[in-house]
Length: 220
Image (cartoon, rainbow, N blue to C red; front, side, top):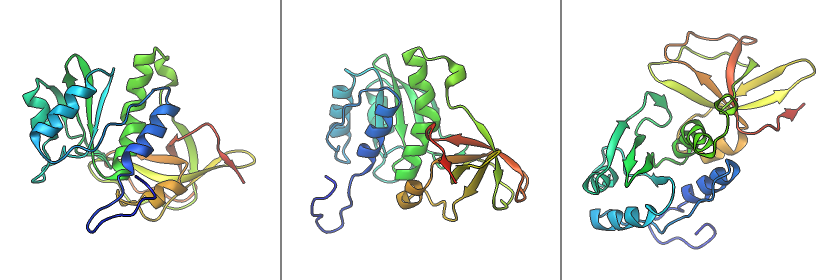
């Protein structure tokens, strides 16, 4: 629990709290389950319990580490995989399928990866489930860069940034550090710059696509 004392070699499980708050902002009613041990049986028990919900989300355990058992546990319960791994950054390990006739999404374990995947992937899914018009799902804006950006690589990159409303137009400033473990940088951001695969280098004052976190934009 955030705020409680940690024993040796432990970290705070912040992902579930951040995701629950984000899901609530999207109109969902999340149920947070206890942390599953890195054992197939325990993960399966949690998945069976979670199947009473309309959407099943897991956090971590979907990559290729020695203790990433979520995929195997779900497959043993009948998971029908739609896709595994996405050409996006952060969030490559994302797993999606159908389990017990429910949409199943396995989110990456890195905090920033999990939250950005929730914004980019889960919000449109929830909008569809809630009957919200697709045109209102993850609306992108155009904003002027305040700093240059290098050429992008093979994966679509969602860069944390600060979006501001000026007198006549929007401006966007990418944050310096984009590591997927840095929640401190995500807490400073109010938008994501969308860099498409192999986007050329962008100069200052060029326009880029922007995905805002909320409708409230800083006015400075």
